[in-house]
Amino acid sequence: MSLLTTLRKPIKFLLRDDFDTDLPAGAVNGTKCRTGQTRTVTDTENKMSVAGGKLVISGGKATPVWGDPGVFYPTINRQSGRIMVANIQQNNKVIIGFALSTTGAATAADLAFFPGNIITGHAGGAQLPSIGSWIADTAYNVAVLLRSNGMMLLLKSSSDWRLMWVDSRSNVSTIYPAITNNNAQAEIDTLRIPHRLWLPTPLLSDGFSLQGISDGKGHAEGIAGGLGSGGGGVEWQGPTWSVSGGYLRNNPSVPADYYRTATLSTPDVVAGVQIHSLAAGAQAGLTLNLDNQPNPQNLATAYLQDGRCYLAKTVSGVKTTVMDQAATFVADAWLYVIKDGTGYSVYYNDSLLGTTQTIADPAIVGNRKHCLYSTGGVDIKAVKIYARGTEGQYNLLEEFMKG
Image (tube, rainbow, N blue to C red; front, side, top):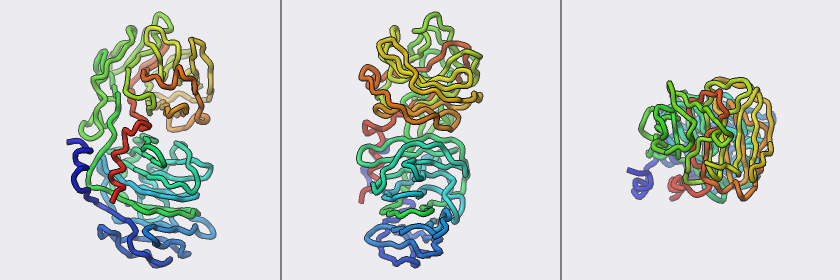
């Protein structure tokens, strides 16, 4: 049964806090949310109140400390597909998600609004790379989705829900829903965890057990089965590529053979490739928005070579490098490209490389062919491609914000 079908039924919540009852500063601790859970609050300088259907934070301590003020809810167990949604309007330094305890910052799986217009996630206490920007005094809907290991982060402002990040690093099982602050002024008007479980399904996932079509096993949920699995049965194009021993290899004859292409449903994607080995001088990575497999003329490519990572665009057959960053090769580390409109962001081994680059060439940005890229001398272990969400692919999350 699809999530859209089940959402036609009344939505039940494991935790729902709509901040219905006004409470003065200093009086929030020990009170209950709509579903009956007790709020545990740290607020030594009485900066947190409830007013007008919102949790209001007037700032942090004179000497800021993460989690003071902060509100925490009783523990839940990690379950793949568990969803937290929230709405927040704030200025600086607020984290929404799941905490390791009922004090301090939320560091089990969460999304953080940091200075410098950067949205940052945390997992297992480690700071993840910058994954987007935010505008002060703007309301955002936030979704933190737990996986068996790690999380997915989604965000919506005035338009569609977007998939911001896919992470696999945290598997802490006992965690606490939380909103934690450092020195922000913030307003949160809902925090909810529905009973319904859900995870996005990739457009393509391949762990290279088959020749010619994707096997759906390029991501953890595809291997385990169940929620979030999918991405198999997609036909690849590229005559010089072969599967052997669980790895994909390429033996190209001409540059047109560097690309192994699949035609997907959207030009805007979150794409990742796991590269197991890379010979000296070899290039390997991802090509997005390619126009034509037999004769590629317009495309964008992010690739590793000899301790560097490059982002290049090719327009009418002419290649131009738009980003060049140091990137020490690590076997089995993931190279990601997030493509959103004319923006291309490149990550390697959980680090953002440079800044988001603009590639606005009309011959590139609307194309729906996405590729693996290799000049040979490379073992590729896995690939996964999700929709970014710019065409409403994840707007079903909005149902959890209603009512």
